[in-house]
Image (cartoon, rainbow, N blue to C red; front, top):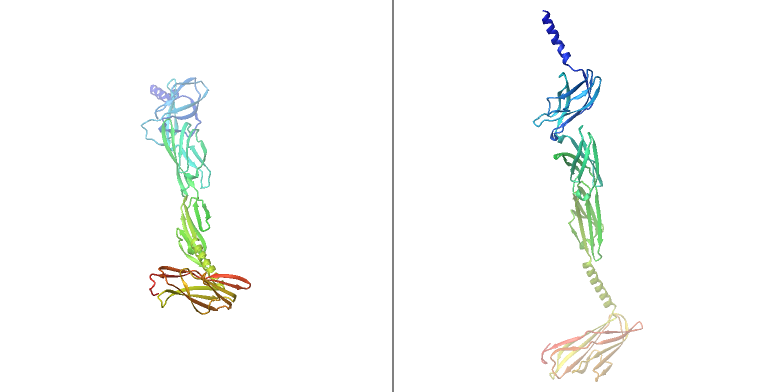
Length: 458
């Protein structure tokens, strides 16, 4: 009976004999194991030896092993700070927060069991990227990358790519560190983009391991519509109205142009107005409704050609001047000829000169000359000439005065015994008169006669 009691007492006493007397305290927190990198998770602990001097080793059945692998000597009452490194395994499918056991074994093979927790993640879950809000007037942008875990990265290559900018950086990122960078913007790269959210991509490389991360850029709405006007040319006037959308929203705009009822007749538009012209008094209003996308420009071309009305005005002025000139003529002299048949068969013409007074004139002298090869038949219609110079073939009539509207007609006959063929011309008659103390002179038209034979009738 005493033998069985001793055995039971010995069995109960065994754990007390083989257990080690240590205190373990964990100091680090939020440890991670990044599976893609095959890098260990690091746990910082302190071990206090409450028993006899001894050497201690550490091991676990979790993962691909634990360091330190060598034994650690801790004297009685001594406390040592240690970093335990636990490596991942290639065949793991575990993800997320995991708790595992590890063991501290003394030199006499006595040991104690402890536990640790670690977050198992892939590299793609480590980083966060983003950028500040932007608008079409922004000159710079802020872009950042943040390490979301308790892990130190060195020689990290990051390539940011977006519709607005590109940036390459080589950096170190401490645990949970966030780094920001300022980028100067080139507005030509995004002048066609509309407001909204755009993707920011980052290609991240460490130790030849690549991963990608995505963020977003908020392209804030901004209305910027710029209008420029050109106006040149006098005779052919050209107006160009250009509207450019430098914002990032679709702009609806209206352009109204005023023209007079005269200028509108000589004006062409490109493009044509979208609304029918509206008339108010002496003005006509033309309207264009336009929808302009970001980065787009639209122009309205208005061309007024004053050359045609200018020529019309010149013609009208010429007619007016000529009319005034004719109405201002105090005396009109007209000369005409007609064929007459002579008894002797000679070539004969009747010459008639008409004086038409527009105003009252005095001391009127009419002078007419005969062409060579003809002789005058001394028989006159109306008043006979005051003087005749047969050698110089010259005739003169004198009139004391002519009242406004009064007409005087004189005529005479010339003949030639030599037949005349072709065109026969008589020189113009000259009238000299006095009006309001001034001597004036006017000439008649030239008179022509076309003859084929001396016996033709006309």
